[in-house]
Image (cartoon, rainbow, N blue to C red; front, side, top):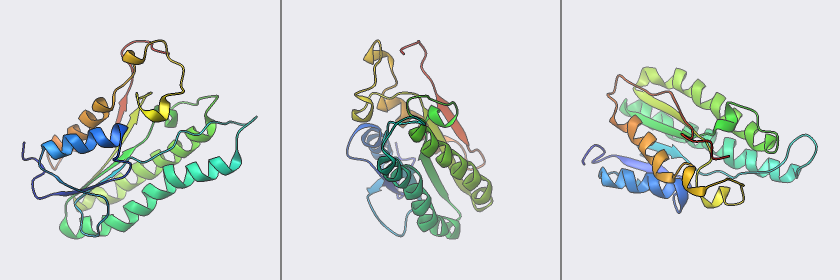
Length: 194
């Protein structure tokens, strides 16, 4: 219950859904949760937007906005906070990706592109920052039952991933030893809910 005592955590998108569940899990470990700060030991890049569109349709302006939120914001936050983590020789950066980064999705190619970019960024950061004792973990969930996916057609909403599932994946990264980094975690459905 004290795994993160005296550790500060910045969580983007923490007001609802996955971010809120991550915050609750980290609070249970006595983490100090903050929205902004320069002296941080852990960063959770959770904020994101599910944008429709592919090669034949879509709003290019919405794509730009999604690229900024889903990819450029995590890049900038990582760049801002990783030097302090390097100086302390401890850090944990969690990036919330998507299975869309691993496999193409015909109706949401623009969203898949943003998450594919985030995947490349996260895996590259892992390689660069591990020598400083900083873990960088990418979590790729399938559809999660949040406001963002409310319009997605599924057979049974009870059979898709829940925000708590993602929070548990974050805790896996927290609970592993300093010598162990789950570089990439993919969370899939146990039943065919689509």
